[in-house]
Image 1 (tube, helix red, strand yellow):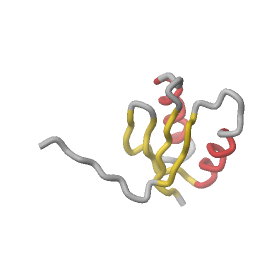
Image 2 (cartoon, one colour; image 1 turned 45 degrees about the vertical axis):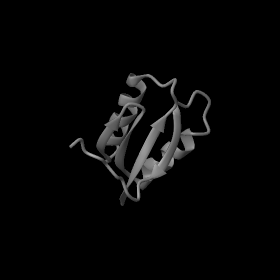
Image 3 (cartoon, one colour; image 1 turned 135 degrees about the vertical axis):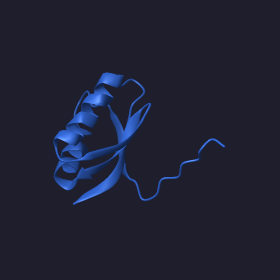
Image 4 (cartoon, one colour; image 1 turned 60 degrees about the horizontal axis):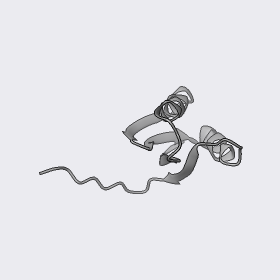
Length: 78
């Protein structure tokens, strides 16, 4: 089952790295909901989420953190 998560990248991550990871989420059955300057929110299947978490321990990893998105607040311009 997929749960909503937010994936945030380090300031050193290029847009190409962020886009590539968002594409990998989609290729592995996830759904990218929204993109941000340093990351994205997505529904990520548990199997692929485990892969992302394990990548946090690898040298050269560009992901700063991955967090479950319990609630997202958005303030719209008037």
